[in-house]
Image (tube, rainbow, N blue to C red; front, side, top):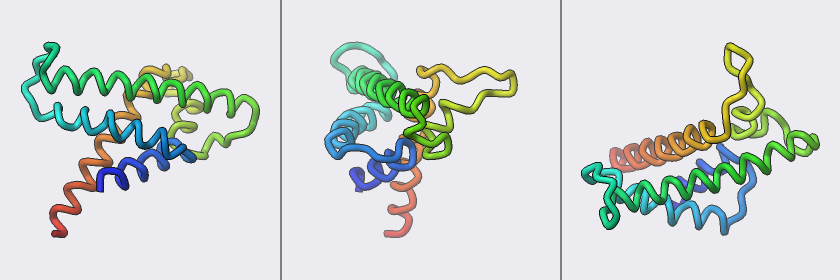
Length: 127
């Protein structure tokens, strides 16, 4: 179920994604999920610390994907409305400022987590 959820969210957020990338994100995402319910002690050796390390790994990977998409948008190979990643990169806020890649990566991680949480809750209620 987790693989399916993460894959669907990756496709919504980032369109075409290689299976190896999804597997790597899923591995890190599972570590992230395991530590989210623990006491928030960011001390090496705790599950929470491993979760924060995995979250940072996911953010770095998302930033790489964002840079790739920015290049694709500049070359007109990708559409500004292709996916959420493109949307975040091309749409400015009310002051005309584009969101920094770090903030976009954080938003995308939150959306991955929320999508997973919502799907898990819905499947548990249906069972």
